[in-house]
Image (cartoon, rainbow, N blue to C red; front, side):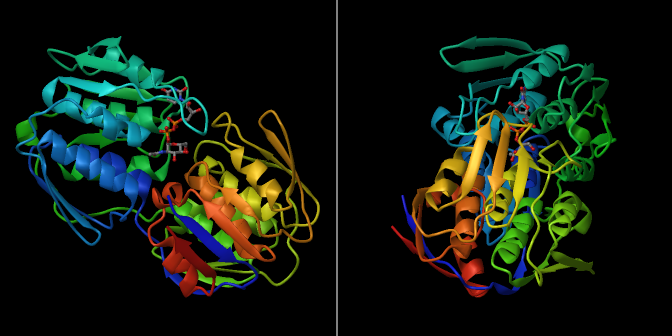
Amino acid sequence: MGVYIIKGGENLTGEIRVQGSKNSSLPILAATILNGKKNTIIDVPKIKDLEVMTQILSYLGADTKKQGNVVEVDSENVNCTKVPEHLMREMRSSIVLMGAILGRFGKVKVSYPGGCEIGPRPIDLHLKGLALMGVKLSESHGFIYAKTNELKGADIHLDFPSVGATENLMLASVLAKGNTIIRNVAKEPEIVDLQNFLNRMGAHIKGAGTDTIKIEGRRIMDLKPVQDYTIIPDRIVAGTYLVAAAITKGRVALTNVITEHLEPIIAKLREMGCIVNCSNGKIELCVDTPLKSLDSLRTLPYPGFPTDMQAPMMALLSTVEGTSILTETIFENRFKHAQELRRMGANISINGNTAIIKGVKELTGAMVEAKDLRAGAALIMAALAAEGETHVEGVYHVERGYESIQDNLVALGAKIVKKH
Ligand code: UD1
């Protein structure tokens, strides 16, 4: 499975180029199914989740080629509408293929995504929206069968601004007959990226980034190939490296960033006393005074503080004098890293969806295990600051989302090796 062995105590310094966004690349690769043409996408990170997505596209009949961070998908010969169960199980977010396959073929079979380490992740909002568009749904033996003679535009109100449901319904409505309005949608930058990609393909979508998205349905013959579409930078990866700089009291500059997407994270780091300078697509963070605890940090849908940064921030707050209160409002059961951080000497108590973190003078190296992607990132952050050596097991989870994290941290001066 792989273990990172990290010797803490180095102040990280230097510059890193941030990878393209995982959470944009996934729905955008799914979207390539819609036009039946050749699409080229730039800055797709080389990570496990995207390997799985390209494997699924190939299985469905697409011709996929990868060269570095450029992925070409020719979907002309896609003819299969069943997403293989073993690949679907590897990555819950493959559920976005549902909207794209339904959009092109009017039918799809996927396996039901089960619960995962960060709690149950139902897809009721995806299914309710599709039903309003005229899709007949049935479930048996862990599979969902969806079928329609004609996808119809609909007026859909999401009970919660789910990222995945917003993406799935956008994908389904591109080729639907008539107009679709989706209200109370997610406003994450990755939704705007998906809209931009689909519009480059010839879709008519407006409103991404606001509460309401409107889609005018098109015919497949109206859709064009998309050449050289560049994925936005990964704001969570950028946030993680900013935390790495803060926790090691270093000085790290990041290129390939969109500052606006990072505002919710930068605001909290500044509140703690980090010095963050942003200019010309570059962000630099350094620390020259002891950091302060946070009275309140709540995860919220964008533009609130992202749940994906909750675990790395918990690691950072564990090293800061005073008491911090961190509330997770998006996912149940997303505090499993707290128990691992405690092994390193952190003082964290959990009460429901609230973590009370009392900063300690020093974390100490220990044997810990990453149970999910961002928990893994948090443990690496803690290990970078800890006294002694930490073994972080569960490297597989980290590599689902972070491209070359070990090389990047080593380039900044960290002592980290990987053992198989
Ligand atoms: C996406 C991101 C993930 C991020 C999350 C929230 C991808 C690949 N993943 O996940 O990194 O942490 O957004 O920003 O983009 N919910 C329902 N019913 C539904 C759908 C969701 O109850 O039909 C609930 C979920 O259980 C969860 C909350 O809504 O509690 C948010 O989920 P959602 O926004 O859908 O997250 P994902 O799209 O799964």
